[in-house]
Image (cartoon, rainbow, N blue to C red; front, side, top):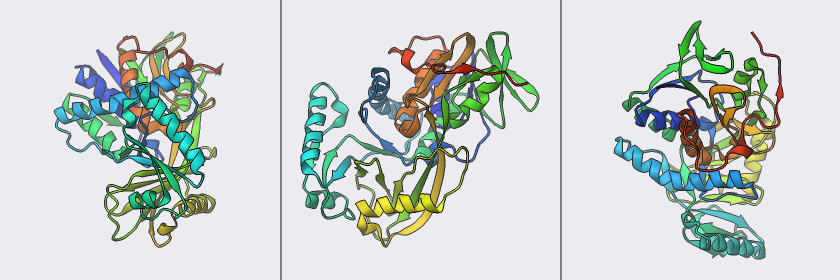
Length: 376
């Protein structure tokens, strides 16, 4: 069986690895657009659903938490020793200790109902929080969750593609157009050449809707621009610092080499790949309000990426009604690096005709869509 995967971000790379590891003939095609979310993403990995989400979305989160350890084991078996993932723990910070205490109690109750991936959960006084993240503001207490992870999305993406190649997957760079015969997607067209396949996994991130319009489908996914700052704090041993998250959904993420990532904006501006003065100001202002000790850090880089956001906030995962041979996997929004690997695995299984382990009906990609006139 041959499957073509369109998109080489975290979702597409995960799908390709899953398929190739099972002996499927896999071709990954990607046009290397500037602003792909995987390359820009900060890399916070949550082992539980954050915020109120529908059951189908929550099920995907729980599956993602279980999937990461298995994925790392599989990659190690295939000779990949560095997949970019480290479990460093994380803290939600605020001055309101009453609110944090309630959050701690909710998480403890969640762990008691079987959410073992959370690990130890602690309420930290401001001094204890600063011991773990030394540049933090002096009045911020925290709820610490040991199970939160840190991921370099580029490293995991490359690890998955490398491992997939070791199992025979091939890769081709360039623009692809979905090929259709009647009511079935039969492959892709690249540079005038039709490449046939038994199934196509469409994991093109924020560009997925663009690729589906020629089929007469308008998917509810759009690019959400995220601007993130990379800072260098010379002399700081940042490798084991935890992830820091505020109640306003801003975050600070430390990596080895005295490097920190802070962000991010959430902007609906189309595919405008610019770091703007307003975006830089907002990112740094929020970072310094949380961690004033970063005032002397070097601004090393601004990264800009386009999250594939959906109109209703839910992922798009599954086939399109009335159109065989195509599986869509996108719309993960800000949770792309957490949900990407399990989403790719589910998409791969769907392409092989396997039933998913949960009800994906609420995540069907053609919900809330309307027909458009196919383009030539």
